[in-house]
Picture 1 (cartoon, rainbow, N blue to C red):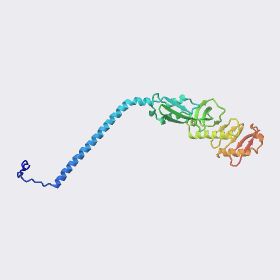
Picture 2: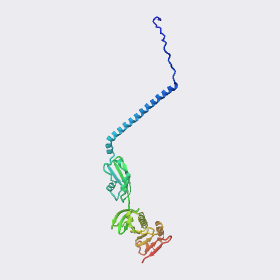
Picture 3: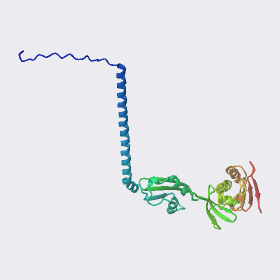
Picture 4: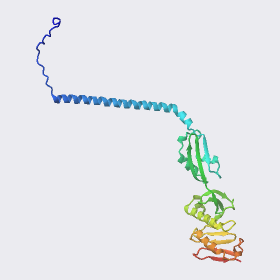
Length: 285
């Protein structure tokens, strides 16, 4: 077998190679390669981000283009419901809301509609709610008539807060108390002091009305010295709380002659409650 094996010939001698390496140069080359790798990675990441953003924008644009009409049809207002109206009717409230047909529900600004509805003198508060998917609901609390205010021979219907609900002219409503002595320009403008005088007159009418039947007439020329007229009698009130003054009268009423307070008022002409812990009763002929 050895006859068939070839002997390896020795290599011819060549020039000696210099295999010494510079460690600092090797580190510099590795650092350069690392920086290049990091730059390529950063570029690749940014390219992916830009590509994803562009694709997302295109998809959103396409979706908005094709889904816009469908979304508008899905959220289109088809019903405007109104709750809590008695003096006003539903159509008046819808007209105040000024909502155009076909407006998407999500385009509605409820605060704006609320202000528009509450601008009506009969509306005390309004609440506007979006009901998915096609309903806009308007809930109203109306002001309630509390008195007839007469100023310069004109009658005005007012609520318990002194707000003018309607100008009646010469018309009247004898089921409500009458308040006079009110400044007309201040009443129309809603001046705070005038409204306070109206509210005081209404409160006085409510207090006295618990003990006497018939229409009450309150003179509110001076809010600190109100006068109530009922059944031919005149009650004068001072700065003290109205309820306390009236309660003082109620306590002594039973001690007076029954015929003086039999509802006809034939003998008692005036009751003065302006003085603390004292009641002055003046009789008429």
